[in-house]
Image (cartoon, rainbow, N blue to C red; front, side):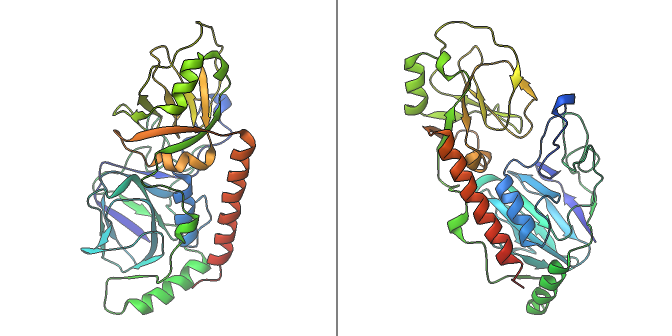
Amino acid sequence: MSIKVVRSGLLTTVQDLGRYGMQKYGVIVGGAMDAFAFRVANLLVGNEEGEAVLEITMQGPILQFMEDSLIAICGGDLSPAIDGHAISQWRPIFVKKGSQLTFGAVQSGCRSYLAAAGGMKVPKVMNSRSTYLRAGIGGFCGRALKNGDVLKLKRPSNLALRRMHWLSEKAGSSSFSISDWSVSKEILPDYFPSSTIRVIPGGQYDWFTPQTREQFFKENFFVTPQSDRMGYRLSGPKLQLTETKELVSEAVTAGTIQVPSDGNPIVLMADRQTTGGYPKIAQVATIDLPILAQMKPGEKIRFQKIQLEEAQELLRSREKELRLLKQGLSLKR
């Protein structure tokens, strides 16, 4: 089974959950920016949660399916369509051989995840199939997709094959068929039009002036065009330290908010470096990283302070919902 890239789009890469255990060697984690949408897309097509998918940014590709396939599209709404017919997200879709998947105008968010039954068949590099563009490793030849590429798929699971059979019968003469059920909106992150991002105080929170700490939670910040998979540079009130201090570089993670000398915060994202030497004013709660991953340049962010225990409880609740979703999907055709 395979998918041909007719047109590559702005930035379409193969991603999984990341390259863990390699940071001590200076190799970043990487992986999907919106891990929630990534995981759900895989579950909908009968894959394990960590199978490689396509991460599609802003302007989507044109893809042709070389064999009958089962797919799911989750995350930002980039107006997906099959052979000119608009399709829904957050549900399984059967696509017949020869059909073309296209994307149009961005309706919400900026990143969409296309999972195909079986997962993308690309080699693992350091135990991950994620594309790390700066190093040219992982994914499809270590790069973003180009026109004419052909992506091979692994063998679908038995659950996926049963779902494909059911949807293929439903398709009839149409080139595709969409499941009449979808993931409940109640378990989706508050993607759109949310601008509130919950954070816990960072390691150097007390280094900042009282006025800066107050501004950080009361005033708006904006995502600048100088933002990418490595980090979001924000504009807004200048954040100031009580005094200049030296900081030995230390470990950082997804959602770490560093403040360089110019006072403009940087939120570290999937392709973040392994260590950082700037003061850290806050850490984004893991549960809100998917919301942040879908924000575009120019969009507003307001930070909300919560405690570590609350962040942990929110994450536990999210993981419980995903476990229940997985159990429920195993019973669906």
